[in-house]
Structure formats: structure tokens, C-alpha cells
Length: 276
Image (cartoon, rainbow, N blue to C red):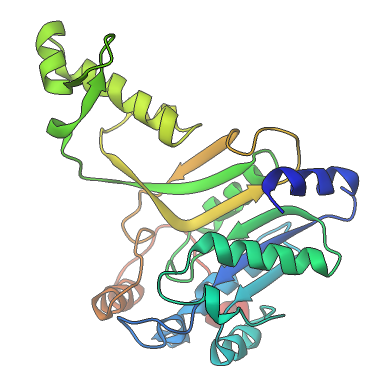
């Protein structure tokens, strides 16, 4: 069932619809064995995302989607549901997130659920701002897609724009004609954002950089009949601690140091406080 079909299902039964937080967590991590339950600050890594989800207003169910019974047991200990084990054919190293999302949504609907919102949180981003995450969830009730992004260095010298005759022209060369490189780059950036990340064109007013989507928050709303590829909104993750994404032993060491030494300046979910 695609987004459009799920919207129709919601519109037919809005009163009984639920909002689900979905945390995908494969058991076969390669760089750090058992990464999703590796201890961080004395708690399993996945516990941070579970506790964020449980802290949000308006969430009906928190589901961990895993192929590992060991991860499932840990997830249940911190208050998440693990109603199924993901099949092996969509749990390998190159499996797509969309397959895991689709499997979970199909399973929920096969049990009679109607979805109002479906939010995916990667377990590898432990330091989410609770206030920002709540704001993003609130936005899911008004949008088809809500996501997160970060700015990363970008080599603008390689960027081209399409001329009126259909040929590509380097931005720097185009700026020579207009005499304003900054204006030319900003216009190209705005066009790029509009095409790649609809709803984020306002970011063109800030520092120019390449945009990269992140797994902090991926929300899908089924509340209206807007096009499934439109009505999108992206939140920029700027704080360096909130941007920590764990994939290696070095990332774990950085996160441990952050917990021990730094004042985050925003509230995060701490497993020892959210209970089991």
C-alpha cells in the first residue's frame, strides 16, 4: 500500500487512527558488532531513541523493527513493542529503509490499524533535542513529509546551472557575466533546494552548503489528500552534539565524552530517567 492509499484509509477512519514511532535496528551491524545495543553511558544505544519516542506527546505506539531477538529483548525492557521479527530478505547490509518501513506499516494494517502518522527514528542518533523532536512530530499532523538535514562542505566550483538553450554552465562562469558570484550561487542553491527538498527553500538565505538528509526524524503524515511528494518540511540539525551519528568505535568514544563532559544546552532523553 502506497502513501496515497494509506491517506484514503485514514480519511475513511480518522477517529481510530494512530501515530506510530518506528525504530529500525538490524542485528547484523558490521563496523561495531551488536552496535544497536552497545552500551553508551551505561545504557544500550537503542534505549536513547526509545526513550525519546516514549517522551513525545501524541504517540500511540513505539515499535522496534528488528531481525534480532537479542535486540528485541532489550527494546522491550525499555518499553518498546517488538510485535514481529523482520524477515531476513529485508535485513541484510544493503537492505533499504523503505522496505523496513513498508513491512512495519503493512504489518500494522494487517492487524487492523489505521495510520495517522508514521515516524522513523534511527537508533544511531542518540542525542535528539526533545523540544525539536516534539515540534517535528507536531508538524507531521500538518504535512505529508517531515525530515531532518545537515549542511556539509560543498565544492561550489563544480556546480552548474542550465542556460536558456539547455546547455550547462558553471556557476562561476555565469557569475562573470552578472558580476555577482554570491547572487548566482544563492539562486542556484534555492533552485537545488526546491527540486531536491521541497519546503526548505528558506534555507537559501543562510550559509551556502550541501544538504544531507539524516535519520534523526523521518515523519510521514496520512492526514490529507495532498500529493505524496509535496507538502514537505525539513528541519536543520545544527548543534554539533545533536548531529552525532554513531557508526564506529570512534563515534562511540565521542558520544561517551559528550555525555561526560558537555552541557548540551537542550534536553535529551536519558534512559536512566525514562525508566523501563
